[in-house]
Amino acid sequence: MNVPFYGHVRQYHGIQAEIDANIHEVLESGQYVMGPMLQRFEKEFANYHGAKYAVGVGNGTDALWLAFQALGIGPGDECITTANTFFATAEAIWIAGATAVFVDSDPLTNCIDPSKIEAAITPRTKALVPVHLYGQCADMKAIREIAGRHGLFVIEDNAQGIGARGDGFRIGEFSDAACTSFIIQKNLGCFGDGGAVVTNRAEVDRIVRKLRNHGSDKRSCHSPGYNSRLDDLQAAVLSAKLKHIDEWNALRRKWAARYSACLKDAASFTLPYEKPGYYHIYHLYVIETKEAAHRDALLAFLNANGIDAKCHYPIAIHQQEGYPWGKPAQIPSAIPNSERNAACCISLPMFPELTADEVDCVIEKVLEWDRQKGVA
Ligand SMILES: *Cc1c(COP(=O)(O)O)cnc(C)c1O
Image (tube, protein in one colour):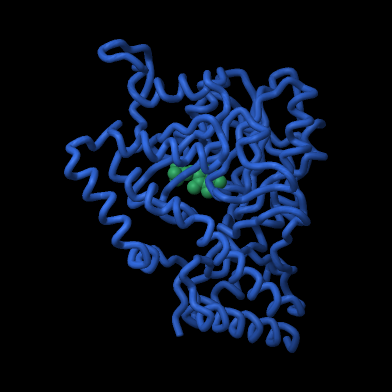
């Protein structure tokens, strides 16, 4: 049996009538950019977060750096984040003209370790940029507390956590902005590129709204801005899918629970850690081999057996060749947990439309490899 990593077409077929009807509505309206469907989706998306505002933009990277820009973060400023994340987290900081400073991640959750943040704060620090990695919230209570004490902004990289919750907090609740991506691989994916900034701050909403549309909030009047809009066809797809996101996330949790129950006795790797009281939505189900040398072997074994496992992310940002912008990586102290995560991670197939047979096939192959390791 072959097990794919994604189920995009299965998902489309599951709610095809709803998506097609929304797309048809846009096509017949003749309003394809900044039209009523975008407005409708922005309202729905803000409501979903219990937030005041949501602004649709071109992609998740733009969502991040437009939020930075709306908050006045730019050249000379430092933003504290993690190196074990998708490249775009740091890329957006650099695009804004600021410097990314990497602190270590928590060894269990792989999200930023709040206890490492304060030692990295300098007079130039302007913001904390936690990532809700793999679909589990970073510790926003601790992060907000540190930010409050030092007068820092908090911008959440929520590309992977739509629908996740912490122990008594929601995404967007403890930050100046929460930025997400709607590229198809994400839990809420459109049929192209898309992103959004969710915020409770009227100023952030107003400025991002203006920046995304050539610096214009009034016809023919402009200040310097950009073109980064979420188009109405993507909004149509997202509006249809948003109604299902909670049930899809629940299915991800169901498959994660099955993986974890059946793999818990394996000796050669560790399983994802779910923090008590947190609602992890398993954007990715990531195991870590105990020995870095085993990672590529397990990945190759699974791939050779028809299982499309992957790595997120095998090269931490500071380890990328030709470190971006020709600057030295800003790492105030060692980040062994982020480096271990990069060296040992393997993502097993994870999407709502998996079948029990597929999940069991993955489990069987992973256990087969684990037993061979025990012999070797
Ligand atoms: C996907 C992703 C982004 C960037 O989103 P794009 O829409 O591809 O620009 C940023 N941060 C993280 C953590 C991501 O996973």
